[in-house]
Length: 304
Ligand code: 13P
Ligand code: SF4
Image (cartoon, rainbow, N blue to C red; front, side):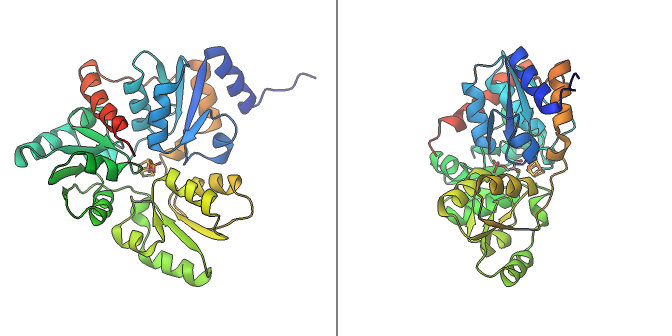
């Protein structure tokens, strides 16, 4: 009896045939994260690893801005995203025209943009940051005032730690993290005594203030594996807890969490079809390539 090749087997075969790698963000489901992924991590790790890969094809199991960043750093490689509609509410909240207007309004003030932005927005900025290196990037500028766009809450959370710099921001929010409230955390503490609460800095500052620790998805994962709290709540996207729990047996993970509809557009089925059909290819307009890449490379050059 010939056995039908399942999605995981097909993806592993296709990766070898195409000399392809799968880069997966921490918010991908466990069935993607723990089976077909070559590199997993936060936005910063995915950008860093995209530079190192020897593969000809990169499949980005994540959202569109992550695939664009991989393309900026690998102009000669084929970068595929399994679903073109995997967007991001932060990336949708600001345009390059908005940045041009801000530059007119605040002449000489450096523009730091979150990697959760389009290539056009990156091209209009001076340097990028992620939640994993935002503090180091702001400090590296040695400026009294910076524009940090478009995530208002990330900017406010960083502002609290770096009061000596005036951080101007924008009204963009992550549709997943903006839903958490301080009451959610107080309720968890009551229902699960001793729970250690880790929040992503895309959460509102009043939520971060209720947490025990705030950091990028990689920072949260490191915290759990290094400190091994008996009971932990990750105030972030749901798959994060599933993935970190699988790597840390014996730790109790407290829910609820929120799903990112964009991240959840990626599945084993569409990763397989991306590799079978070599679609959907992510490209960056030639005129944006050099300036957008420069903003990302400046970020990667900052030690964090
Ligand atoms: P990090 O993995 O960089 O913390 O980003 C979180 C996020 O929301 C990505 O979409
Ligand atoms: Fe964007 Fe938030 Fe989804 Fe990340 S979790 S892709 S920041 S909407």
